[in-house]
Image 1 (cartoon, helix red, strand yellow):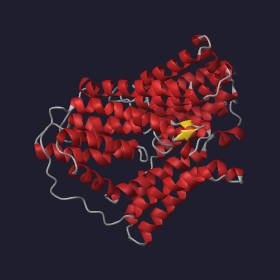
Image 2 (cartoon, rainbow, N blue to C red):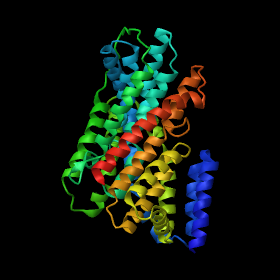
Image 3 (cartoon, rainbow, N blue to C red):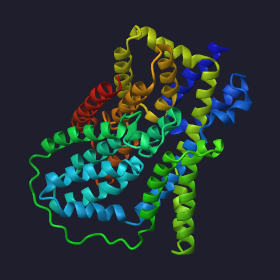
Image 4 (cartoon, rainbow, N blue to C red):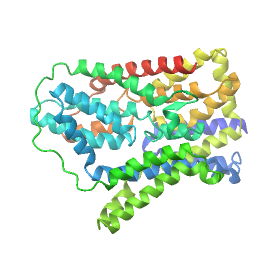
Length: 426
């Protein structure tokens, strides 16, 4: 049975790589096969799916759409531009702004918000927008690992490690991933300043974006505040306690949709907000949760963890280094969501095998897998979205051109995070 589980699992991953457009169907089909051949009992299917994670992702996506529609991000970008002396600082500031937004908002949505601002500046000053858009995309990817709601990979880690919103800031009396990511962002900022050192043209802002509806901003801020409060106060009901983050996000989304329908009288916004939720990703994750539950049931997760332990000779530094840099390399070519979903239980098994707490390996995995996507144009959805915006404007970006920014940015950010995590958690 274990051999069959291994064949099915490897076939699933091969198909995810070969058929990226059909990865949702691959995951669901694989999950169904694991059930049909008897590796995964039907009774264990629903318990294997982390509905808290799925509700968090779905609710956040809907709230983010309403936030974008309110034009608040555009106003914030205008305020930043008004305070910058020239194009060099404007682009770097927009990249940092994209990063800050991305700590709380989906990476792709962040790029779709901020990239048009950079495009407008480029048109106004008759400069090439390619490097600016790439800088915004890679910066948004970097900051996705900063908070619990910043990226799907962070939400997955939170679910696996039972981490709440505040744990990303301070965890077990030590600084958490948020500060690691911020120091990495600061280090990479100097690279961006050097890259745009020749862009000294001044910017004159004609008119700031007007915001007429502040309620979506209130919803987004409320989401963060409530996630913090939920982490501070224990809940006695176990079912609610294990799903509280997802419940908060979904309730706030419902409130936002009702507000649009009853107060703004915009039924079309309600329909679009519901459509904007990425159901493909939610179904992909549901399928992967079942697949991972099945290989765990078959004992493969423990075996893979033991294999890592043998290769490293049981040395924590070697294991940690392998996890970070293998994750960087793989995430440059494959989607980091299925990769992280698969590796989280492997890391837990590996920590058990080495008889150590899994925290350093969890954070190393998140650092490598989230930041590694910046190496190549296809390594992250935000990069693809940014290049899509450029393509619509007539700019075709080669892999070499992207990597001239992506590679140094990634290496500086990952190296900073790699060293910090080891020094703090080893």
